[in-house]
Image (cartoon, rainbow, N blue to C red; front, side, top):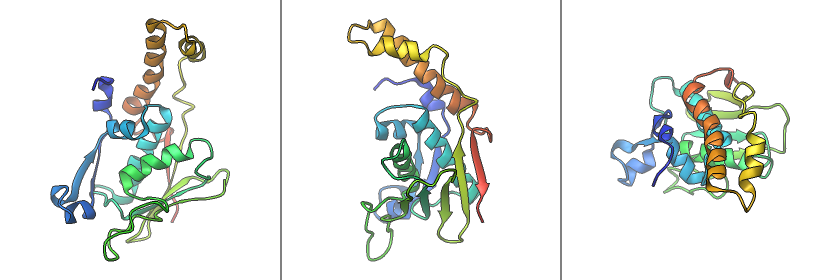
Length: 204
């Protein structure tokens, strides 16, 4: 598989999953997720997928500090319905990283390792952040994404119109793709720790 090289440069997220340890899927349950994993899940790379990746990373760092986050020990609350805007796409990335799943999640084994119901949706509450909550100590943080300081290329709209035309040349399509991924690259490599882009607030 060939993909943009910057995917490998993007921040990685290491978690410990007790379920993975219990079932022998990974030694000590330690798993490292890469941005490419989120791309595989979503089937594409865009500012929403990259933004959700950075939001999950920032939330776990705020909740766990220098300790390794525990996958399956965090609940996630989305302030919108799953079919509202990009809510569903972002939620899938959060599930990948945190293990928190909606009603279709894993039921657990003998009451342990339950993932079902750890990700919840609200009925469109404007202005509320996405919240991540540690189940063991109750610590909760809100995370918001603001892409205003990472704007798309000025001519992206024109490039899109040209590339989506059935008669578009390979060069036109590649030019659009490069411009599209250019914004994703800038977000992941230049703004991963930018508090103006990924805002984290303490809820309790």
